[in-house]
Length: 449
Ligand SMILES: *Cc1c(COP(=O)(O)O)cnc(C)c1O
Image (tube, rainbow, N blue to C red):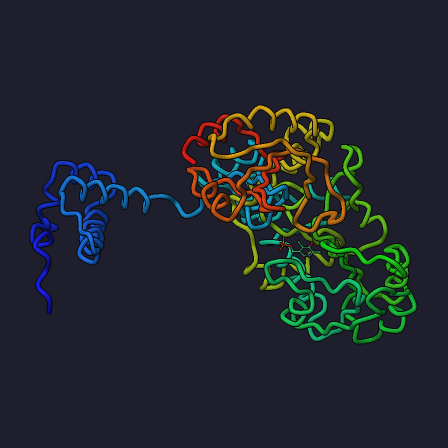
């Protein structure tokens, strides 16, 4: 074995480093095991390096830096400037303050989660949101689970295990993150009975498929694509009439689902849960954190007898939501009782309806805050709603094109204290400013680039 280089012989010991005054403060902040671990790791790095630094002050600095980096939580706030408002990888909906306060109170304290305060006995977890959901959608009953994938799974498993589920070939969707309808169906224990063709499905296709083995008929919102050209699909009204005649439940997986007519806010119309139930759906499933603008959850609304069956399914227990999610959902649903103020109070809707003029003015203001090594120009661009809502409808927006715009630029923006996520396009790094609300926090960190 080669003898250590003379400089390495001068390397201080772990114990000596731990006894330094600066280490005392680090131990206070991070705990002794973490500091010891960081010292060992830094010493190992120095021993392995071709050009070792043995200066004790510099070693302590490196230990402090390492501890600081390790203390960063893995899950951190970022600036979503991708142009996709409901970005699944960036956590979808931002919650309103009302929901955040309700979540904190529920997290901090015991709550009447499954306790009926009036009667002084065990209550239902769903009770906190069921009334609101029924009022907002016209449903007889509603239940809440972990997400919409769970809602679809619970519904199929409860009503169609070992039975057939006729579904149009044009609606066998894959949503990002491994939600593929045929796979969810298989896991739920039901058999997919494909009807129609990719581009055309008729009422007669369903009529032929429904039989004694049918558990329910499912229609799925084609969230992230549209089929154009020579197409035909069956209206919910017609399908629900057929299902009623044949005495099988008719369910619609709405995906995003919205509780209000978005056209009143100048956005493209998206079928509401209420409309879908009015068209005769017995059950509707939708997400809590897509257009609804709440916490991650899956909601099943519809006929009381069917919802009750799902509550009794042991899977419901495995898929249930916690008190914090319920607190958030409840606070968000309350905002819907005042639709006139919804766009101001619900972040998802506020961002989706943000006037392009306001975004453009914001872009012009922050463009000057970038270091001179970047060439920055204000541009018009288009935002997407995201999360499979209205995939072909774009919202006019504005932002910044930053050059040079390669992967290195994108990486340096991601390494800021509050990482900035944009997109690379045509040789530029594009920031769509629709979702930038904290302008000063954004601008003040740009000098670190
Ligand atoms: C998004 C979506 C799902 C999955 O919902 P999650 O809340 O992400 O689990 C299921 N079906 C449709 C039609 C969707 O758009």
